Length: 115
Image 1 (cartoon, rainbow, N blue to C red):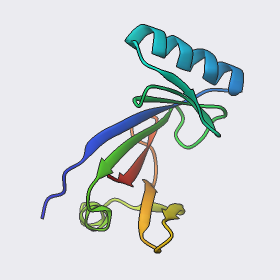
Image 2 (tube, rainbow, N blue to C red):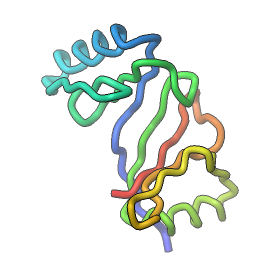
Image 3 (cartoon, helix red, strand yellow):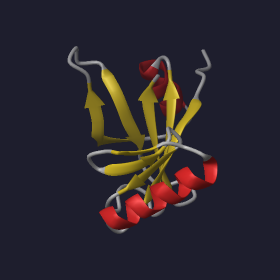
Image 4 (tube, rainbow, N blue to C red):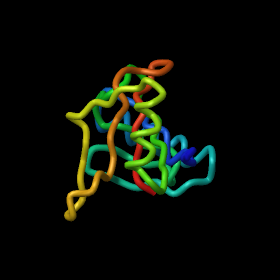
């Protein structure tokens, strides 16, 4: 079975909370998006997550969503990809919510999450 993936958002690393807010406000202004505050990041609509401090990936991360996360993980493993198990997050029922692929792709980490 081939899984479907959709872009969830782009995470952009910044040096600090002030830079994250400045970038989120700029992107919100450019693209007519609603800015919002998060715990670890500032958002420009649903598309841009401006990190308050550098996180995974030299430039940031790309978040992809899929309806069947377990199947997607198996498919990606068969394609030879590995996962950063330290980043795995689980819901109250013990089901995988999200996880990062190991390594970087064009300077970005890739985050796979349940749709």
